[in-house]
Image (cartoon, rainbow, N blue to C red; front, side, top):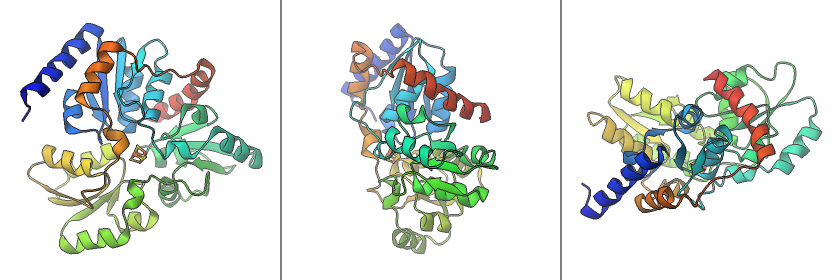
Length: 308
Ligand code: SF4
């Protein structure tokens, strides 16, 4: 239930969206009130596709830094803003352009596939990018005659290796999502013991042991689709708690158990209704990617979109 103050901010946002011909893209892990004012809610894959097809003058991204950069790279003629200044995904920061250059020197005959959770300057050096949604499909077409350099997430690297039987060289060899990596086998076993009839669904950013326990692994968007369309009535959701909450709202006839209420990506939750309204009003928080970096990063991103 919205209070009057919240209703007034929502009204202000709607008016500003219309006036500025703006759309709002929000990640599935955003706060519910942000998802409610968004024109598109989805995982990285869905949001990238929408950003590529956006018919508007301004795009406001409620998510983390790499998502806003991708929208800017795909829309050099539009203004891209983000209310979430400081929402820097710690996973994306773990692979620098310099480290990737070094790895490419060490493996000159390699192909470079990066998880989309990377910064534009790093993506600018890749052959292709992928999300949890399309990782298996894309990796399956690469590396037949050369090694695949993959970064920066070890969980996704394991997911691809297991799903495609391709050997990946992980760069760096330690990077994980600090949120999904908190899910342990012990904790998951505890929840499964309490709800033995529930099916475990997991995000590929979870660690390998947790993935091995899961009955379904995919992107947030595909997890939503699977849980809604399946005949199964109870699920344990090994991902950010917001995904369980969203699923519970959207599929009230089913039950979703989070692995832990404290599994929250704070970076995805930086956007608030007030700072969305302010960002639309002032347009101060514009996301700018240097022209040469954007031109180079667009190539691997568009290559991924061709697979979608
Ligand atoms: S959930 Fe993990 S990978 Fe996603 S934005 Fe948060 S820290 Fe980054």
